[in-house]
Image (tube, rainbow, N blue to C red; front, side):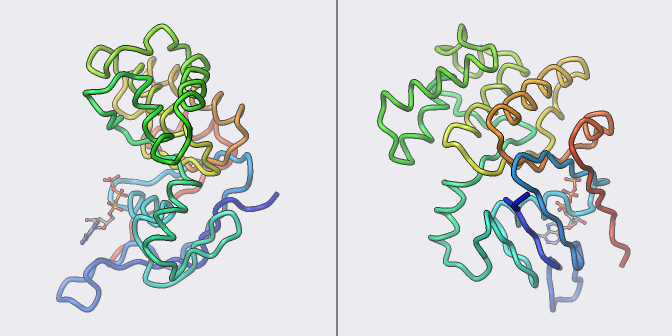
Length: 223
Ligand SMILES: Nc1ncnc2c1ncn2[C@@H]1O[C@H](COP(=O)(O)OP(=O)(O)OP(=O)(O)O)[C@@H](O)[C@H]1O
């Protein structure tokens, strides 16, 4: 299985060289293969967000390498990283961050237009994604008119709108009640499996983690 994401010997310390350095990641390596769904389980403060930011090319490690689909992103320009992020990565957060003034379908169309997709094709893809998550009938509604679980399903569609190679998710169902979280997670797994993309999904929920292909546990560093 080829690696979609490969982190090699990553280290990160905040405030390095200052009076109160915070070492967070030390010599961490991980890989996510094509079609693989990996759970990232970490107690609060262990560096889960730091790791997702590094994997998502939003932050850089002090040492180590980040390879995305075989391409070494270490030392690449901001422009190249932004491009790679737009083309290869999809993000889902605990709170959906949908644009409130746009409808569900527009929230899925807009990132495609920003990537140069033609309007008709972008709408067709958005409709297809909404159908897959059972929300065709809510396409014209704005986020505030949708339930929390529905908003999160729209956020999944948006993350997948540009056909990413890797989905990075930070507690994607964390703000939902347990029953809704379970249902919405099923939808996410269905989407990921259908599209064959790789996913790294951070969760505090051991039951959700157990349903993924592999679990990576991060521990809090002492000192
Ligand atoms: N900019 C920063 N400067 C200094 N310390 C930081 C900075 N950002 C994060 N940290 C510290 O690094 C550690 C890891 O932070 P991170 O946000 O990655 O944790 P996390 O595992 O995502 O936690 P949570 O699950 O609570 O969100 C924490 O102790 C945090 O206080």
